[in-house]
Amino acid sequence: STTRPAVLAVMKLPSFYLERLRQSFELLDRTHQTDPQAFAQAAPRIRAVTGGGESLVDRALMAQLPALEIVSIMGVGYDKVDVPAALERRIPVTHTPDVLNDEVADTAIGLMLSVAKKLPQADRYVRQGLWETQGAMPLTRKMSGARLGIVGLGRIGQAIAKRAEAFGMSIAYTSRNRKEVKYAYFPSAAELASQVDFLVVITPGGAATRHLIDASVLRALGPQGYLVNVARGSVVDEAALVEALQQGVIAGAALDVFENEPHVPPALRELDNVVLAPHIASATVQTRGAMASLAFDNLAAHFAGKPLLTPVPECR
Ligand code: NDP
Image 1 (cartoon, protein in one colour):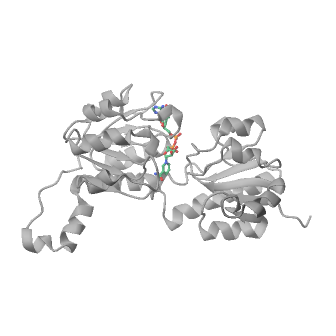
Image 2 (cartoon, helix red, strand yellow):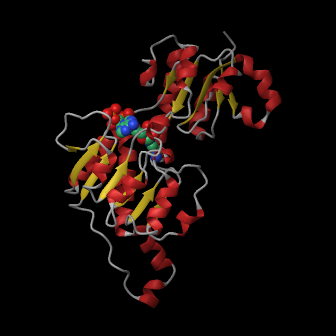
Image 3 (cartoon, protein in one colour):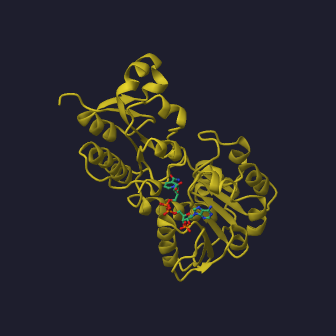
């Protein structure tokens, strides 16, 4: 047939993914946000939705797409996709697990080193000429050999643990279920936090993990403890975190994700014991390329009548 399936991209996507989509599909690039008239005209023939891990694919959007057959997320997290609403219409949702494990784990280790050794602060120290006027920087904290706690020992959590082993760290974790691993298990985030120097959060987002890291967990982590969040902003009570950082309840934090992205509370930006990143944990050319390929291949499989490569667990 000459009519290519219509695909709606609901987020700004990398050009290499958009180009591949254009080759096989009629691509509507964020038309639902930019051109309501064109969207209303195209909506009845849109058969697929794609977007990054932060894509909002709610019941209201899906209700406007009567021909929708598949939602392909270019990311492993899909907490803003209303999966129950999709399942009601037997619309499968796919994501991109595993291909980003190394990248996100690398970023987590980088953030741990950054917050402990104050590497971004050190860069600023030199640029601002403080080395010349103030002399040496204050001493920082060694990471090798320290105690690491991982909240969420899934695909990425295990990749972080593997790297931390090479740093001679002792490793403990919490998750819903205990795993067949040699690392120490704690049944709650607070119990884990009380036993570690670095607490790295790498669970999914969504209602089930909302504010899993609250004021009590931060108190348990304590004044020598560092928090690293590469999961979702919703997992950490951001207001409680700001207060804990301001009052020395914890030593510092490194954050790749925030409750209301791209808004970062000014109070966080003002703190010197904090390292901030704009949701870049998987954002290299190589890994985003692999994620785009997998997101594309799921769409291609669907329209070829073949089994999906990586449906989300609820759709398997
Ligand atoms: P997995 O599903 O493999 O692992 C998730 C882990 O979280 C599991 O160990 C799971 O426990 C645990 N978990 C889930 N719910 C809870 C809960 N309520 N309390 C405690 N632990 C819980 O996912 P991935 O490792 O592939 O990815 C994890 C998340 O990381 C993604 O969902 C995404 O939100 C985030 N992410 C962020 C990125 C970024 O750019 N910053 C990039 C990539 C991912 P159990 O095994 O017992 O079920």
